[in-house]
Image (tube, rainbow, N blue to C red):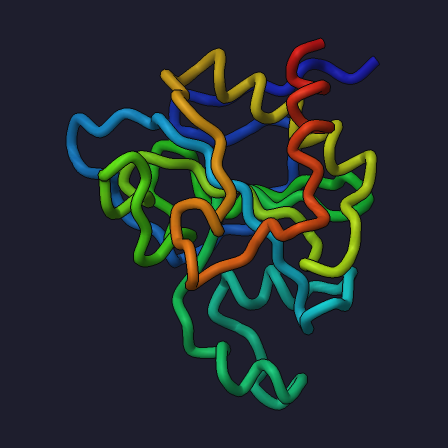
Length: 183
Protein backbone atom coordinates (compact mmCIF):
# COMPACT_ATOMS: atom_id res chain seq x y z
CA UNK A 1 0.00 0.00 0.00
CA UNK A 2 1.35 3.41 -0.98
CA UNK A 3 2.00 5.90 1.82
CA UNK A 4 -0.59 8.63 2.32
CA UNK A 5 0.40 11.84 0.56
CA UNK A 6 1.51 14.69 2.77
CA UNK A 7 2.08 18.39 2.22
CA UNK A 8 5.55 19.65 3.05
CA UNK A 9 6.04 22.88 4.96
CA UNK A 10 7.04 24.55 1.70
CA UNK A 11 3.78 23.50 -0.01
CA UNK A 12 4.67 20.49 -2.15
CA UNK A 13 2.58 17.30 -2.12
CA UNK A 14 4.45 14.04 -1.74
CA UNK A 15 3.91 11.23 -4.25
CA UNK A 16 3.04 13.41 -7.25
CA UNK A 17 5.08 14.53 -10.23
CA UNK A 18 6.40 18.09 -10.03
CA UNK A 19 6.50 20.31 -13.13
CA UNK A 20 7.46 23.81 -11.97
CA UNK A 21 5.56 26.75 -13.44
CA UNK A 22 7.06 30.24 -13.41
CA UNK A 23 3.53 31.68 -13.38
CA UNK A 24 3.28 32.20 -9.65
CA UNK A 25 4.27 34.62 -6.95
CA UNK A 26 4.05 35.14 -3.19
CA UNK A 27 0.64 35.22 -1.57
CA UNK A 28 -0.23 38.47 0.20
CA UNK A 29 1.05 38.47 3.78
CA UNK A 30 -1.40 36.97 6.26
CA UNK A 31 -3.75 35.64 3.56
CA UNK A 32 -5.26 32.25 4.50
CA UNK A 33 -6.29 29.71 1.88
CA UNK A 34 -10.08 29.61 2.10
CA UNK A 35 -11.22 28.50 -1.35
CA UNK A 36 -10.59 25.61 -3.72
CA UNK A 37 -11.28 26.36 -7.38
CA UNK A 38 -12.01 23.48 -9.76
CA UNK A 39 -11.06 24.05 -13.40
CA UNK A 40 -11.04 21.96 -16.57
CA UNK A 41 -8.50 22.15 -19.36
CA UNK A 42 -7.54 20.21 -22.45
CA UNK A 43 -5.07 21.25 -25.10
CA UNK A 44 -5.94 21.39 -27.85
CA UNK A 45 -9.57 21.75 -26.74
CA UNK A 46 -11.28 18.37 -26.47
CA UNK A 47 -8.05 16.37 -26.87
CA UNK A 48 -6.57 14.53 -23.91
CA UNK A 49 -3.09 13.22 -23.15
CA UNK A 50 0.18 14.67 -24.28
CA UNK A 51 2.18 17.38 -22.59
CA UNK A 52 0.66 20.56 -24.00
CA UNK A 53 -1.00 21.58 -20.70
CA UNK A 54 2.38 21.27 -18.99
CA UNK A 55 4.02 23.25 -21.79
CA UNK A 56 1.32 25.91 -21.48
CA UNK A 57 1.86 26.32 -17.72
CA UNK A 58 5.65 26.47 -18.31
CA UNK A 59 5.34 29.16 -21.04
CA UNK A 60 6.67 26.71 -23.65
CA UNK A 61 3.54 26.13 -25.75
CA UNK A 62 4.40 26.16 -29.46
CA UNK A 63 2.03 28.57 -31.25
CA UNK A 64 2.50 26.51 -34.44
CA UNK A 65 1.48 23.28 -32.67
CA UNK A 66 -2.25 23.86 -33.21
CA UNK A 67 -4.29 26.80 -34.58
CA UNK A 68 -5.85 27.34 -31.13
CA UNK A 69 -2.42 27.89 -29.59
CA UNK A 70 -1.79 31.09 -31.55
CA UNK A 71 -4.32 32.87 -29.34
CA UNK A 72 -3.14 31.52 -25.98
CA UNK A 73 0.59 30.74 -26.18
CA UNK A 74 1.63 34.07 -24.65
CA UNK A 75 -0.76 33.90 -21.65
CA UNK A 76 0.93 33.50 -18.27
CA UNK A 77 -1.25 31.05 -16.34
CA UNK A 78 -0.83 28.09 -14.03
CA UNK A 79 -2.58 26.06 -11.38
CA UNK A 80 -1.42 24.30 -8.28
CA UNK A 81 -2.52 20.84 -9.41
CA UNK A 82 -3.50 19.05 -12.62
CA UNK A 83 -5.36 15.73 -12.49
CA UNK A 84 -5.17 13.76 -15.72
CA UNK A 85 -7.95 11.46 -16.88
CA UNK A 86 -5.87 8.50 -15.67
CA UNK A 87 -5.81 9.95 -12.15
CA UNK A 88 -2.15 10.98 -12.40
CA UNK A 89 -1.54 14.22 -10.56
CA UNK A 90 1.02 16.88 -11.43
CA UNK A 91 1.84 19.83 -9.18
CA UNK A 92 3.03 23.09 -10.77
CA UNK A 93 3.05 25.56 -7.88
CA UNK A 94 3.49 24.99 -4.14
CA UNK A 95 0.28 25.71 -2.24
CA UNK A 96 2.17 28.28 -0.19
CA UNK A 97 2.43 30.42 -3.35
CA UNK A 98 -0.18 32.09 -5.51
CA UNK A 99 -0.80 30.29 -8.81
CA UNK A 100 -2.26 32.38 -11.62
CA UNK A 101 -5.40 30.33 -12.27
CA UNK A 102 -8.48 32.48 -11.63
CA UNK A 103 -7.87 35.76 -13.41
CA UNK A 104 -10.53 38.40 -12.84
CA UNK A 105 -12.66 36.72 -10.20
CA UNK A 106 -14.97 37.25 -7.25
CA UNK A 107 -16.06 34.98 -4.40
CA UNK A 108 -18.47 36.14 -1.71
CA UNK A 109 -17.68 39.77 -2.54
CA UNK A 110 -13.91 39.28 -2.48
CA UNK A 111 -11.97 39.92 -5.67
CA UNK A 112 -8.60 38.44 -6.70
CA UNK A 113 -9.39 34.84 -5.80
CA UNK A 114 -5.82 33.77 -6.57
CA UNK A 115 -4.81 35.50 -3.32
CA UNK A 116 -6.70 33.05 -1.11
CA UNK A 117 -7.37 29.96 -3.24
CA UNK A 118 -5.81 26.80 -4.57
CA UNK A 119 -6.44 26.00 -8.24
CA UNK A 120 -7.05 22.39 -9.29
CA UNK A 121 -7.23 21.64 -13.01
CA UNK A 122 -8.93 18.50 -14.28
CA UNK A 123 -8.08 17.23 -17.73
CA UNK A 124 -11.41 17.68 -19.43
CA UNK A 125 -13.80 19.88 -21.33
CA UNK A 126 -17.43 21.00 -21.26
CA UNK A 127 -18.58 18.23 -23.61
CA UNK A 128 -17.16 15.09 -21.95
CA UNK A 129 -17.67 13.44 -18.59
CA UNK A 130 -14.76 13.25 -16.19
CA UNK A 131 -13.36 9.86 -15.16
CA UNK A 132 -13.92 7.98 -11.93
CA UNK A 133 -10.18 8.10 -11.26
CA UNK A 134 -10.26 11.89 -11.48
CA UNK A 135 -13.10 12.16 -8.95
CA UNK A 136 -11.38 9.80 -6.51
CA UNK A 137 -8.06 11.62 -6.79
CA UNK A 138 -9.76 15.00 -6.52
CA UNK A 139 -11.68 13.98 -3.38
CA UNK A 140 -8.49 12.67 -1.73
CA UNK A 141 -6.67 15.90 -2.54
CA UNK A 142 -9.54 18.03 -1.23
CA UNK A 143 -9.70 16.10 2.05
CA UNK A 144 -5.95 16.56 2.55
CA UNK A 145 -6.20 20.30 1.82
CA UNK A 146 -9.20 20.68 4.14
CA UNK A 147 -7.20 19.15 6.98
CA UNK A 148 -4.38 21.67 6.41
CA UNK A 149 -6.23 24.90 5.57
CA UNK A 150 -9.42 26.69 6.75
CA UNK A 151 -11.25 25.91 3.48
CA UNK A 152 -14.69 27.52 3.43
CA UNK A 153 -15.85 26.55 -0.05
CA UNK A 154 -15.19 24.61 -3.23
CA UNK A 155 -16.21 26.47 -6.39
CA UNK A 156 -15.95 26.04 -10.11
CA UNK A 157 -14.06 28.56 -12.20
CA UNK A 158 -17.42 29.49 -13.73
CA UNK A 159 -18.74 30.33 -10.25
CA UNK A 160 -16.03 32.89 -9.53
CA UNK A 161 -15.79 34.25 -13.09
CA UNK A 162 -19.38 34.01 -14.41
CA UNK A 163 -19.86 34.98 -18.03
CA UNK A 164 -16.13 34.70 -18.62
CA UNK A 165 -15.50 31.03 -17.83
CA UNK A 166 -17.56 27.83 -18.07
CA UNK A 167 -15.28 25.27 -16.44
CA UNK A 168 -15.37 22.74 -14.98
CA UNK A 169 -18.46 22.64 -17.16
CA UNK A 170 -21.85 20.94 -17.28
CA UNK A 171 -20.33 17.44 -17.30
CA UNK A 172 -18.74 17.91 -13.89
CA UNK A 173 -20.76 15.94 -11.34
CA UNK A 174 -20.80 18.03 -8.17
CA UNK A 175 -23.03 15.49 -6.39
CA UNK A 176 -20.55 12.70 -7.13
CA UNK A 177 -17.78 14.81 -5.59
CA UNK A 178 -19.92 15.60 -2.53
CA UNK A 179 -20.68 11.90 -2.09
CA UNK A 180 -16.98 11.00 -2.23
CA UNK A 181 -16.12 13.75 0.24
CA UNK A 182 -18.75 12.52 2.70
CA UNK A 183 -17.23 9.04 2.95
